[in-house]
Length: 147
Length: 299
Image (cartoon, rainbow over all chains, first blue to last red; front, side, top):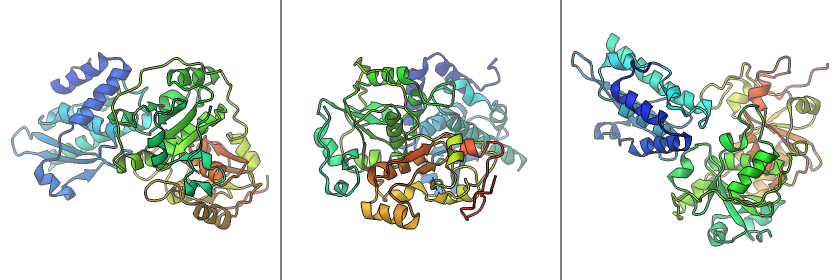
């Protein structure tokens, strides 16, 4: 059923699903803590980041695509520590999708956020924030392919 | 036994000074046995990143809202929640949270629906505590089991339903949303996702007073004289007025409800928690677009 997910993302989804709800929230918190800092070239040039306005808290994103035939995608996120849920979602997408070829990212189903089993604990509004993040990544990758 | 009020000089000017505590006061009283500190945030994970030592978490979404009906939990569920959090009926509860206490004020208002008597806000909320470099912990107190009676909610004095608001038209209404939401330029908060209101605008005759005007830069409440200047002088509220405040789902208007009731002493203030996500979707209710308050058309 989840065969369409890239391996790492699939593993993350399975990790979430294996837990009960309080532990799922703790796992999301771990992703929040583990979200990597921005690399220097983005710290020095914050204008290269774009804001995902659909998120409730400030989330900035940069999608970089290399010149190889596979068009490998690098993802960078920035969100403040007082927004752990947003950071957690960003951490899941970063760990699950960073370094993949463009085609694999475009094949990720849009309902992945719903598969984490958090829709009861986290308001629908916030879940839509994660869906919006994924949508933004895919739109940027698609534009990069076309260009 | 309730804990003595914070004698803070700023609070003394408010109608009910005992409804606020300062960070200094809380730091000194953290070990008081009959005091329970509650953190209530918008972000469900924020408490777990570090909170005031001894504080318990109450989540507005999973703890206070009914899971099925768009309503609050009932007396049984509330009693169960209080028991688990170590709160008894005579506990002094101090609530604080993120975003200038939006959700803390919302939780305080829900506690008030159940008539919990001594419930206060930490002036400045979570941000002020952290900004002052005060201690935090990630230790979560275990669930407790204390006696809390099953008290059914008494909504009428402080909660307005859609029909109450229709009956109220002609009396003071305060719209606490952003100006763009008030005029109908947008149906949701800036930087917040679309939340599914089909129509934009405001309830006819509502005055636009964005909630944040009652908060200072550091998230504390503005002084008595500053608040009087806004709500009495500018909006024209008078002591015996019946007032209804609303926003989008009732959380920002809880902040304004707190200001009007506890800081300014209005005795007949209700929060319309259905707010714009109900009104903006309801069939055939009157709506005004633009900056004018608008008038009530004859039926």
